Image (tube, rainbow, N blue to C red; front, top):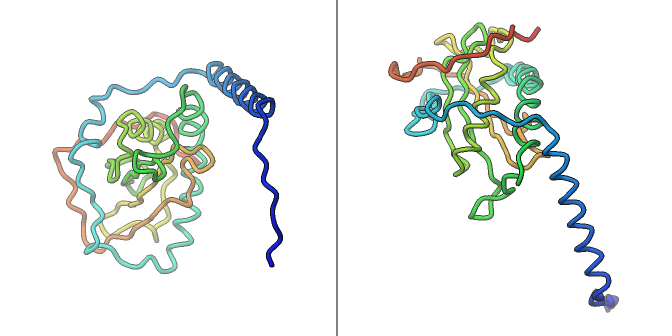
Amino acid sequence: MSPQVETRVPTREELDRIAGWRQREDARIREERLQLPPWVPSNPAKWRTALTGYVPAVKFENVKSLGSARSTFARYANGMHKRIHPPFAESFLASRYPPFPKTADDGRPLFARLEIVLTAEGHIKQMGVVRTSGLPDFDRGALDAVDRVAPFAAPPADIVSQDGNVYVHWEFHSEETIACSTINTSPFLLITPAALPPSAPSPPSSSSPPAP
């Protein structure tokens, strides 16, 4: 026979203690977030093309196996992450009050997936949302975070596709323990040149120098 587990209904005093702790914790988080420098979003018009009607360059029929380039991609993504994490997780997410919800309406984790296309010099050539979080402010925050730390280091030759660009899909989560982790990146090597729409201008990059 399985051992019986004794269950007990919490007393009113215990419930009040729990509720009080939660209130104090909420107040502490609020105070911490209000002390951080406010996140200043870019003009919504800047990302209109990236948010609505963005056509991904990566398609099932134009990619090939990464092969030995997978480990090179992983190292390069780690370098990108060191630049992206501070503005996205430590500024955009951390200063938000109330915080973004951790889950979407359907109960799944709330995140946006961006397609980031870099030139062989590490500049952003094209960037857009290929999977929206459902919250335009959140999606714009992810785009802003990447844009503000570009350009990145010049990528190694073996992760550059035939058209001279680097392609990666990157998830940005509202859950701060995941945030912009490289676990949720998907690099690609294209075998045919991507049809980059000429009508979509490249977003302006910051003037900061490439990472070493």
